[in-house]
Length: 89
Image 1 (spheres, rainbow, N blue to C red):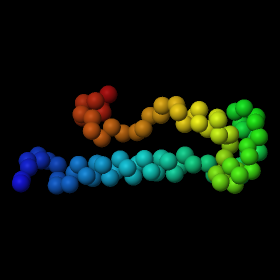
Image 2: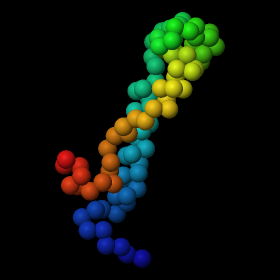
Image 3: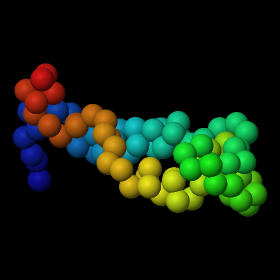
Image 4: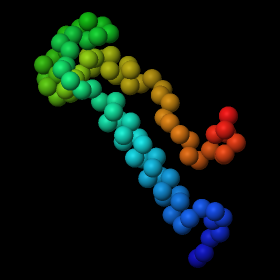
């Protein structure tokens, strides 16, 4: 079955999906802590257990503070499915 795609090449939708996933993976990798772990949480001053410091190199937050931070909404990047007019604003 042939579909009219206008100016979009075949596979353009899958390319958008692949790019969105790749962007999300890159953002997650860059957001991961690096370096030496803190012994105390930088937000609540509670001790960070040794097991957590070993499991997550560069960790700066305790589990409770990290969970609270992770539950906040975050801008996720480019809306590839938005209209061109909405992206010009």
